[in-house]
Length: 237
Image 1 (tube, one colour):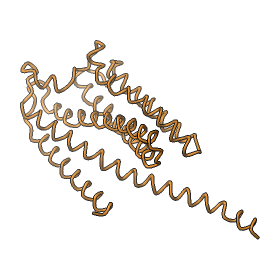
Image 2 (cartoon, helix red, strand yellow; image 1 turned 60 degrees about the horizontal axis):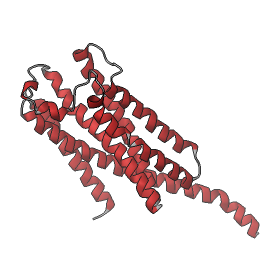
Image 3 (cartoon, helix red, strand yellow; image 1 turned 90 degrees about the vertical axis):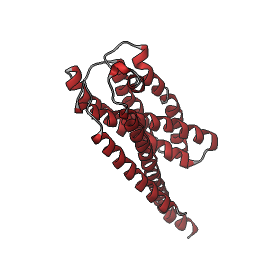
Image 4 (cartoon, one colour; image 1 turned 135 degrees about the horizontal axis):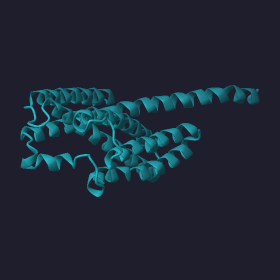
């Protein structure tokens, strides 16, 4: 099976799963407390999951680069970090849309929100470091270390609602399991479907961005060789 076909099949599966998740979310019954606002949960929670997955991927691919010294792992680490930053922004925006009608404000310096915002500093710095180092091997080594350390953000952010008192609700899965929360049983299935769909979305975006990064790297190497070619010909002449 060709690489192009695999990418297309992954893309088709991703679109289908997202459509199924959207259909389930829109057809789910309204929440007894939040009404239609609860449907934001079916996007907000999977988006947060995808950011965790992406940051974990950055650390994993960085570790694989340190162990194997293969450039493809560095490219995937970079791609995963970019995806993580993108979906962290989406998580924050979705959370703000949810916070305004429930808390009365778009933002509070709650532990979960603060650590989420701090992740943009960590991984924004990761991407900035990459742009400042020209040597590919040195850039990959330093980025891998930063990416590995940065993954500590994931458990800290996840447990922030347990370790520090704040206004953010506890883990969603715990709330869904409490009868007092008043959530419809179907909410769990919708969240599961949406989470699987967003996992496929991550894999698809990672694959596409990795392919583009490989092409960019190959083009840069060709351009570099082209710059040195006249010098070599002049020396031989």
